[in-house]
Structure formats: structure tokens, C-alpha cells
Image (cartoon, rainbow over the protein chains, first blue to last red):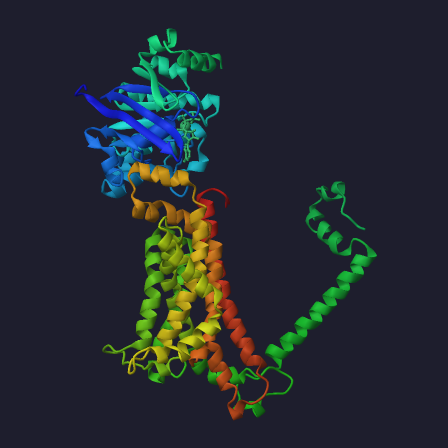
Length: 247
Length: 366
Ligand SMILES: Nc1ncnc2c1ncn2[C@@H]1O[C@H](COP(=O)(O)OP(=O)(O)OP(=O)(O)O)[C@@H](O)[C@H]1O
Ligand SMILES: [Mg+2]
């Protein structure tokens, strides 16, 4: 495979009891690439993301990130946290900590930065996501869009090599979607490697380098966004796009 | 019925603050009559109590016959106050149990005052250090503090030391039990569940009796456990079994998303526990923890079963003094008042933590 690929997923199979959720998923993500992962509900997108950062174990196949075998290192959370960052659909900010502490906790506790340095990292990242005025608020005091931007800053604070986004805008009101997508766009432009599960086809079209289309637990089609949206080759993709674009 | 109508209560005359009040108590003739009647009864009762407890009371007397018959005989409490507070501790060393009584009061004052809120870690450390220091003060055995054997300990100081030590020891124990009960490993979970159910299912009285009667039979001859150690151990286990369930409730209330987020950031099991799960879980169940602490303070009175002269037991024992034979009312009123103050203080402390964290998270605005 190409030597520059950062994330290798090869032939990953995953079962929940008798249900086959992933049936041999393979794809690669190059350094600095932004890949949009899409597919119908229940096709295993979230499960796949959780496998890539070792939150979930799987039955066969291999995942490596920057040469690190995720299955073998899944229990070393501190190690994986600095490799893979993750942003969740429902933010999952820590409600008992201020916005700044949400971001600075990782650097302070896990990267062993002195607390002044950790705060500095927090301030810098919060400014980057446009929230420098909200550092001392608690998560509940922020709108959904603001909370999701804090969550992005929190993940970035661990300086991961790749960022995973699991439907980061699905829990947001329409008017807040843009502010989160703007942050993601800026992140992609800065050269961050990203794997985004999203139904925002505008984002996929304009920002993604590649679209990976998942159905029934395997990669059904993959291609440049332009090609994928204008002339999908598989009937599943045609059907999916007609549903999504009709919205 | 004289229900205050909306339009009248909205009047904005200067006297409007008073008039709804007046209307509430004297709105109708029936209501007025009831108000006057109740106020009279209240005033009469308060006056009778005041006369008995203060005005007609005897504060200093040689014995029971020196007390005036119509009023309270506080002289008994006054004459015995050293013993009630410090047990049979040598008078020269009374400053030690006195300090034991002062320490928690100071800690309370610091913890509830707004001034020291930035010092949470310091307060946390003090909560652990105060019982240890108190126990060390009681035992002594260092230059300047001669050793005082356990049979001289007693009174309120002993009660406080037992309560503090048991509570502070039972808290980590309870967290451990709660975590073990939620463990993925069935053996560990079953052991923890069995332990909790066993000790929760036994009356404390039975546990203490067993400790006194059965332990000496089981232990190798010549091996002895002091009564105080016995009492503290029993109360710690008993309280931990209750607290474990409180803590488990809190752990269950932390959403899985929090654990996922922590894990994704790189927090392992113990760090997730320390920085994410426990702060949230304990915050959620603080009222339950305070409840258990209050119960524990009152449960210390059972240590009389192992033969300790705790606060209540020492008062009871003093009542059999022939010089003071007679009604025990005043002595037990004194005991009740002290217990109530301690428990009320704990309740206020818990409340102040709750209000503060709620204020920090904006639920209560001040
Ligand atoms: N913890 C679990 N236990 C059992 N089955 C699960 C579990 N998590 C997911 N599944 C199943 O795995 C399949 C894939 O789920 P997954 O959440 O990965 O789908 P998805 O593509 O992310 O869907 P969506 O777009 O709705 O988020 C679903 O059929 C789901 O029912
Ligand atoms: Mg999903």
C-alpha cells in the first residue's frame, strides 16, 4: 500500500452476537487527507470509527494508525489518545468542568504539561474555534454549536494525528451547523487528517478529498466527491444519494 | 373561604406588604379567632419553657436537693460537663480532647465560608487529616503528650473521634465496594454484592455484640483487639456498606458518553475515575452522603455495647450517681441538643457544597 497512508483499515469484521455489523471493511487515509464516510443508517459507520480509536474491539482484520496496531494497543488509552482524536454527535463535554478545563484537562493530566502551559494550550485552541470569550463558562451555558466547537478543541488539545468526527452536526439546530462545519473546514485546510461521518453533503462536496460509501458493513464505493455525487456507480449509492439529496 | 383575590393583592399602596399578611391571618372572623387562639397557646408554651429552662433554672448546686423544684436542674450538667465532654481523661491533658472538639468546628467554619473556596484541595486534605490528628491527640505517647490508655477515653470527644474516623475510612472503602459491585468480572461483583448485603442486612447492635462475644473466641489466645478499634472497625464496615450503594447510584447516573469521551481522549480506567466519573458521581449523590454521615454520627451511640463510654453512655452512667438521683430530663435534653447541633452542622455543610456547585453551574443564581 502507499507508504504515505496514515490510517490503514484492512478487512475489518465485527459481530454483535450473531449480527454482522462490519463485513470486511478496507480503506486507507493518507496524511492530510479529509475523508467523508457516509452510508445509510445502521451501515456501521459509528462502529467503524470506534474501532479506529480502539473504543470497540472487532473480530478479525487489522487497523493501524501511523504504524501503530490499534488492536494490540487498545488498552493503552494514553497512547491512542495522542494518535486519534474523536468528536461525538452529542458533544459529551464534561459538565463539572469549565470550558477551559474541558480543553486543558487532557494536556495537564495526560501530556503532563504544567497547569499554566495546559491553560495556555486551552486558550489558544478555544481562540482557534472562536470561543475565546467563553473560557470560564460551564458547558451548559453554551449553545450546541459552541459546545461542539469546545469538543473539537478538547480533542485537538491532545495533538492527535487523525481526527474522527461522528455526525458532529446531527444534534444541532440548522443555524449552528455552519459554525461547526467552518471549524472543520479550517481544520482540513490546515492539513489535519480527518475521517468524518456526516450527512452534510455540501461539506462532503466542497471539503472532502474523498468519499467512502459504506453499506451493510463494507465499503461499497469510494471516489472523488465530484465523481461520487455526479455519477455514482453502484445502485446502493444511487439510492442513498437520492434520499440524502432530496432532503 | 377567604381566598385572597388577585386584584386586591396587586394593589400598589405603600402598605401592600403588610396587608396580604394581615389578610392571611385575619381575613375572616373564623381565621382571626383561630390566629388569636394559636398565638395565645404558642406564647403560653414559649413562656412556660422559658421559665422552666432559664428563669427558674438552677445552674450551680452541690447535688439534686440544691435544685429549685419548679425549674430545670442544669446544675447536674454543669457539675459533670468535663466528664461529658472529655470522659475520664486526666484533667492536666484536657486540652487534647478540647482540641478534638474544636478542630471539626474550625473545619466546618472554613469549609462553609466563601473566603476559602479556592482552597478545595486544602479542605479535602483537612477532612482526612482531622480524624487522624484527633486520634493521635487522644492516644498521645509523644514528648509533651503522655500516652493516655483507652479506658480513660470517653464523652463527646470519643464520640466525635469514632464518628470522624469511621466516616473518613468508610468513604474510600465505599467507593471501592461500589466499583467492585459494578465490575465486569462476575466473581468480584458477586463478592462485593455479598459483602454489602451481609453488613447492610445485620443490625449494628448485632454486629457489635458479635464483635464483643465472638471475636475473642475466634482470635488466637493472647491476641486482643481494643474496644475502640473494634467500634471503629464495625462502624466503618457498616457505614461503608450503606455508602457503597449511595456511591453506586451516583456512578450509574454518569452517562456512558462521558466514559467514551474520556477514553477517546486517552484517560485509562483510574484516571477516568479520578477526573471524570467520581467528581460527577459524588456530586450527584451528595445529599445521600450527608444523610449517611448524619446516620453514622447517631449510630456511634451503639458503641456502648462494646463497653465504651461515648457521649450518651457517659451521661447515662452519671445519672446513677446517688447525689444526682432524680429526673434525667435535663441531661438528655443536653445530649439531644448537642447531637442535633452536630447533625445540623453536617446538613448545613452539605447544603453549602450543593449550593456552591449549583451556583457554579448556574442552576442557582445568587
Ligand atoms: N452496542 C451494540 N450492541 C449491539 N448492536 C449494536 C451496538 N451498537 C451498534 N449495533 C448495531 O450495529 C449496527 C451498526 O451500528 P452503527 O451505530 O455503527 O450504525 P451507523 O452507520 O453509525 O448508523 P447511524 O447513521 O444511524 O448512526 C446497527 O445495526 C446497530 O443496531
Ligand atoms: Mg452512527
